[in-house]
Image (cartoon, rainbow, N blue to C red; front, side, top):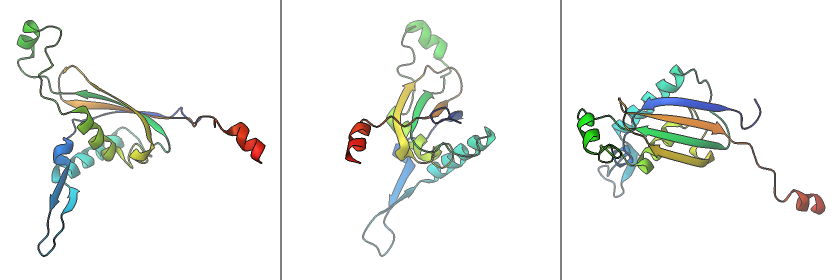
Length: 159
């Protein structure tokens, strides 16, 4: 496949917040805290791995990638009443994790499954979507072609 043509789109479970993703503790007899993944984080990473495998993804995209995130909070039971009261912005107060928290958790959970490493993310676009049913996140990961070097002429002269 030509560089930049590879793309993966996944529908994943709604992410846990970065606020509960990490846990820290001080072991007995130690003076420094240890930071580790929380049980919620481990469960989420496992769920993401299973979803990636179920989607038939056998290897992560290697190298530079662009990531698009569409975060769908759960639609509340009273959504129709909310929509009658405020038709254009009824979902503004629907409970939803912050996009930046969702991005960190998603990228970390996708590492090794759908993307090689989150250090290769060169562009990320995130959007909170209108709740339309079950909470979920749709993630698209696209390989990026390497740009032509702006210094190619200088390198040729230096050779």
